[in-house]
Length: 331
Image (cartoon, rainbow, N blue to C red):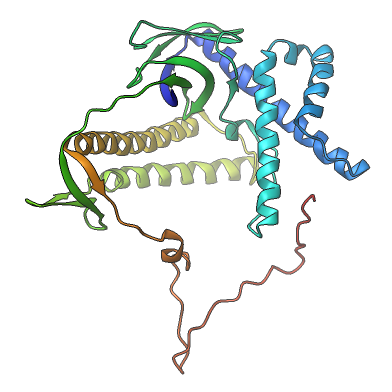
């Protein structure tokens, strides 16, 4: 048995959409409050709080807060676990000499969703034998219509509710035994720049063209972005604020148009990748790939280094701005 993920799209009613947004907001508040508690504990008492300690605090918070009591307890523990993993990765990067990336407070627009641990506790998937379409029962929301189907049906284990560009999705982990049909050919794949890839076989080569989905939509994206820029400047002048200025209905519509365009490009790319990989798997039994060291290839970050008159390489030196301080991480 292996674990695979399947993503269903949710089609909530207007009332259910409001309930989903409410639960997302409460989980965002929980994340920020748990992060603030960890920072206070270290700043005041030099105490490092862990996941188990915050779960005990969550029990106290649920007795005091009606918002937290209205949510599934296991889903709130998942939010605390994600925060604990964020701190574990922070300390790992500190020890490895990498960019630390201290966990941040998140506004609602950056908080993508929440999760559930056990099937039947706060959520239940109701589908047919092939697990195609059906409904997803969520605690405090009710049955939500879903569409999608996995390649290999299995036993539901965990669930994540995600909000992307105004649409709701459920990413469900399944225990299953996948069996893939494949071809009998042998070949090699060479990634390209002008083209997407080149397939080499004993019979010859096949070039897969790059569809350039963004290039076909870029002119419309630029036009919408220019419209957004003009409307934002007008709103800033009218309100006298450069941040948190009032957003009109027209500006909100332009934001939604821009989201739809980017969502269209992302969907086209994903569909192209799925179709191409499915076709290759159906043709080949073994497909060799290039062993590229991507880190060495992108070490310069895409920037050209200038040479001096003597021909020596000049490496730009980055200095902190005047008056800035080096942030101190928690150890």
